Amino acid sequence: MPAETGRLLIINGPNLNLLGTREPEVYGTATLADVEEICRTAATAHGLAVEVVQSNHEGELVDAIQSVRGSAERPGADGIVINPAAYTHTSVALRDALGAVARPTVEVHISNVHAREEFRRHSYISPVVDAVIAGAGLTGYRLAVDLLAERLQG
Ligand code: CA2
Image (cartoon, rainbow, N blue to C red; front, side, top):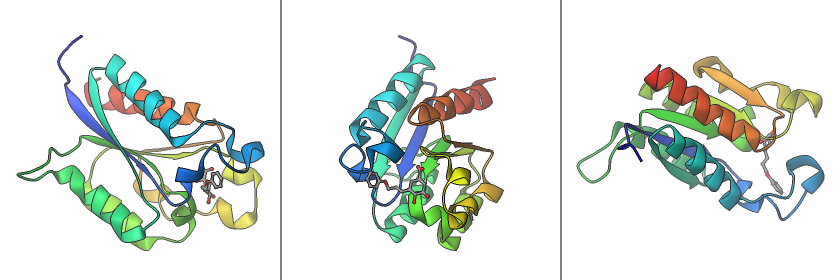
């Protein structure tokens, strides 16, 4: 196994802790633990470390984004995968935080947000990220990790 050559932060927004417990017709039956395993497996194959976080609180998500800068106590991160969940459609704070940290970032949505209610078609986040993946289910997280590995190592 090669030494880890970078770190990714995988951020999940509100209610994604409920994955696998409700609305399987929209979000499938896999859980947040499965998201973590998918990301870790893909990242490891690229020699990248991952940290997966989930919060139901907007300010905690802002703190998580800012944490990629690192500190004396914690390592930072080189890239971000974020499913902002409902905050996609409401949060100027998350958009500003992502814009400020300047790391390659992929926005992921499990469902195809363009095939659902009209309000889900607008994202405050998309203009400040490098790529958007929607409707690929949990595979979207793997694709996001693969893309970031390519951008960071290519
Ligand atoms: O498709 C996605 O990944 C979303 O980001 C999920 C959000 C939704 O607000 C976005 O429009 C699209 C909702 C996450 C809530 O996840 C649940 C999972 C299982 C049961 C209930 C909610």
